[in-house]
Length: 583
Image (cartoon, rainbow, N blue to C red; front, side, top):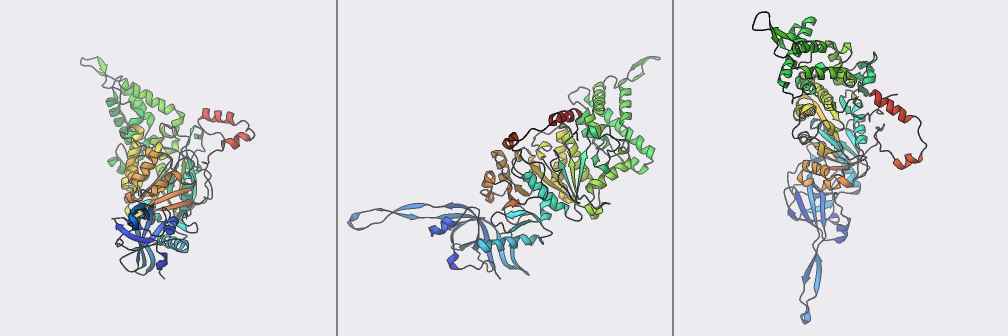
C-alpha cells in the first residue's frame, strides 16, 4: 500500500518557484502556515506517477502587502493581503515501488516539482512509517548501526549505513559536555557486538576505561611504573620500540635541525642504524630480508651499538699526511650534541616504552604478536574476544604524543597495505581528541608533522586498503582541514563556538546550510547526522550506552557541599612524581 496517499484537504500549499534543489511554496491558509515548522519534512507530488519528492522546510515567511481599492466617494482606504511563502530544500525521492521493493527512499532527484504541484505534510503515523521505512533499507534491526532515535519521531529508530559510515570516514564533533564521549561509547558498544569486529580507539585520557564486554579489550602504553616483568602484551601493556620509528621520526627526536652539524648527524644516524639492522639480520640468518631491507624497515637493532659507534666517530683520530701523525676524523667533535640528546632520551623513564623496552620486545617475533593483537578481528583471536581495542595514552608525554599515535596509525596502514587484497580484514581507527595530534597547521614540522602526514594518507587512501577513520574532537576548527575534507559522514553535537560551527557548515552541502543553524541550540545528547551513511539529514537523540565513559562534567556546587575526601592530594602528588597513576 502506498504510504503517501493524500487527499486534497491535506494540501499545505502549491509550488510557485523551482530551483535546482529547492522550491518556493505559497500557503494561502494562515492556520496551516502557523502549524508549519522549520526542519520538518514534507512530500511534494512528482511529475511521475508513484513518486513523491521529499523536502525539508528551510524558511517560513509571512508577508503583508498593502493594496488600494477604488470605492465610492473617491475614498481610497488601504487594504491588507498576504503573500505567505515557504522555502523547501529537496533532499530525495520516495518511490511507492522500485523494482520489487515497496516504499523506497533514495537520495536522488530524478525530477523536480512542477509549478502548482501540491505539497503535503509528513507527520503523525505517516512520519513514523516513513522513518521506519528508510531506516530498514540499511538492513535488519539487529545488524544495522543505530545511534539513537529521530527527534522528529522518537518512536522511530535512526539507522545508519554502517558500511558507508566507515568506508567514507566520519567525524564526531561537539563542545565539552555535549555528549561526544557518550556517542563514541554507543558506537563502540555496537561495533563490539559483531562476531568479527575490528576497531582501535586512541583514548588519550583514559575516559573509556569503564567500557566492558567480551568484544572490548583494554591496553595501555607503558608508563614509568610499568617497566617490570609483568609488563607484557598479554597483560595489556604496550611498548612501541625505537626500531619501529621511521628515519624521519628519529631525526625529529634526536637531531636539532638548527645545529650547524645537523647534516653530519643525520648522515651518521642513517649509516649506523642501517649497519646495526644489518648486523641483527646477519646474526638471525634472515637472508631474504637482508637483501631488501631499508632504513625504514621494521627490523630490530641494538641502540647501544648505535651509541657506541657514534661515540667512536665523535672522538676518532685517523692517520695524518705525514707518517706517524694523526688528525681528527671527519666527524670528530661534530656529534657531541647528538650523543647528548640520544643519551638523554635513553635515560628518560617517560620514554622507556620507546627507547628502553624489555628484551623480548627486540625480537623479530614480537612484531608479529603486536600486529596480531591490533589487527586481528574478534573471531580470529585465540580467546574470541577484543574486536574493539581501546589503547590508553594517558601516561604518554604530551610532547611525543603525536609521534606515538601517528606511528601506531601508520603501522596499521602499512600492514593493511602489504596484505593481499583477498586477505584484508577491515579496521577502523577512532581518533579521540584528534586536534591534539592532527592539528590544523599549515606548515607542519617535527613530530606533529609526521603524525599529520600519516593520517592524511589514511584519509586519502585508507578506503582502498580497508582502513576507516573516525575523527572525534571538541574543536573541529583546530583539526587538520585536509583530513576533515575527506570525511563524508558527520555526527555534530552542540557546538557553541562560531569558528567550529563554520567549519561544519563549510563541509556540508550548500542546501543544508539552514539545517546547521541548530548546532548551538542542540540539547545534550542530541546530534545532527548528515552524510553518505544517513539517507536523511537527521536530528537524532543519542541512545544511552550500557557503560558510560569517565567524561562526565563535575558538578562544582554539589561537590562543594559534600564531605572532603581524605589523602587524595597526597596520592596525586605521588603519581605526579612517579609519572604514573598510583593505585
